[in-house]
Each structure stands twice: as structure tokens, then as C-alpha cells.
Picture 1 (cartoon, rainbow, N blue to C red):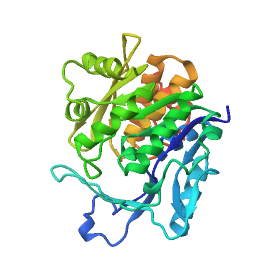
Picture 2 (tube, one colour):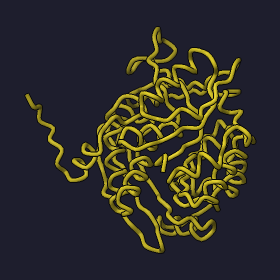
Picture 3 (tube, one colour):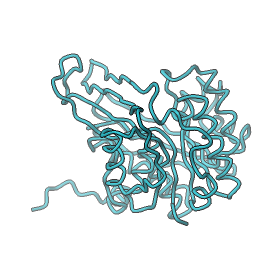
Length: 329
């Protein structure tokens, strides 16, 4: 295979004042290149795998900034389209400590990536050369053309016997619960590996019951081969834990709970999924994949920015409880 994973989606610029300054009083902003679909391709590339990202960027310095960042992560950018007189999406993030809640403000309407359509990429050529094909619920919510492109993306991947992955990320600033549900019921029959959580399962799909029953409803309704359910526990704003489990062939698998201190929680769910895909691709072992994902997610909480710049050895050391926090001189 040319690629281990191909992802399609929208990159964003994340702008934040210094910790723990308010946006309303900021006089400088730190910049990171982020975006859920980009994060997955970047994290897996940082772990040493071959990934490609499909998107559109503005043909201006901000677009080139994103392009250069993708290349620095190790992502193949050869399929990215540069569009004159277009814009890049932006998210403004304010970090805080309890009891002041964190803030995220999006300015993404009309971005170059939101105009992606079914005619933009050589789907057959690209997807016949990858093992995994990935996008999520955020990209499908950017507009009808992005939903159509996602359907074409997954249809082509399935016709080439590639493994498809989807995270049902929901952003209320993009669409209503009913619109999301109507879109996702078209997508999910094409999905092999599905990632969800309890709140979305109840809020969007109206599911109820135990964790096992929730996962079973996805498998029964849509035929997904693997259904993963994740949960983040947050104690205040600076400490938490990650829990994950999966349903495959009627059997439940549980990942090892991972605790962590929080430097930056943004992109950490994407890190978990990246770790799961990496682990599953390496070993074809669900328990190993869950534990690798949990460990990568824990590490990602301790790193500034949305990308976890770690090695597989760093992750496995944490999985095996061999991480040594002593300073070595």
C-alpha cells in the first residue's frame, strides 16, 4: 500500500492567548495548525506511518502555512488543492482554570475546505492505495457538498475493500441533531470502525441502555464491524482519565483506564483514535489497540497543541507502566 491512512477534512488555525489569559484582554495569540481530520493523519504520521490528507486550502500565506505544517508532520500533501481568493477556518481557544469555563469560538463559514465536492479528487486512484480511510462527523457537517464527498470517499474505499473509520464528532454550531442524524444514517452503513460516546448516542440517535447495549445498537442498525465507546473523566480542568471499550463479533473488549494531568486537552480524542488505528493496524488485536489509544491519548493531554509528537516506544512504555518520571542527567 502507498498509504496506511487517508483522511479527508478541514484544517483550522487555532489561535490562543497565553495560559490563562482571557481572549478579551489578549495582545498576542499563539498559533497551531489543527483540525480533527488533520490531527488523525498527523498523529499516525508522527508514529511512523504513511498518511495523506485530502483538503482545499487558500492560495495565500495562510494556506502555505498549513501546507508546510502538514509536511512537517510527515503527511503526504500531494493531493491538496490550493484555491485562489478563499479563506482558512479559524478557532479561537481560551484556556482557563476552575471555576472559569474554557472558551472556543469558531470562524469557519465559507472556508476553502467547506467547498470540497465529489469532483475534487481522484477517489479511485487515491483510495485503492490505502489500508484505512477516515473522516468524521465534523467534516460531514460543513455543508451538503462535504457530506456528498464523504459518501463518495467511503463508497470508493469500500468498493476497494479498504477499512473505513468514522468518529461521530458533533458540533452544535454546524447543524441540528436531526440534520446530523439524517446525514450519519447514510454514512454509517459504509463504516467498519466506528467511534462514539454515550452523550452523542443518546442525544443524536436516541439510544439508551448499558455501554454494551449502546454499542450493540450501532452494530445491529448499521453493521459496523467494530464499535468503540470512549469516555473522558475530568476532575476540575487539570486532571482526568480516559476509558475506552469496543464491541467486535459480539465480544466486548476493555481498554486499561489511563489517568493524566492536563496541559492541553484539545485534539486528545483524535489522538485516541489515531492510537487505536495504529495499534489495530500493527497487531490486529483489539485490546492492544484500545490500550495503545488510551496511552497515546494520555500523553497527548500533556503536550501543547493538537498533535502528539511522540514515538511508538513512548506510548508502549506508558502502556507497560515503564515510564520513568525521574530527571535523567
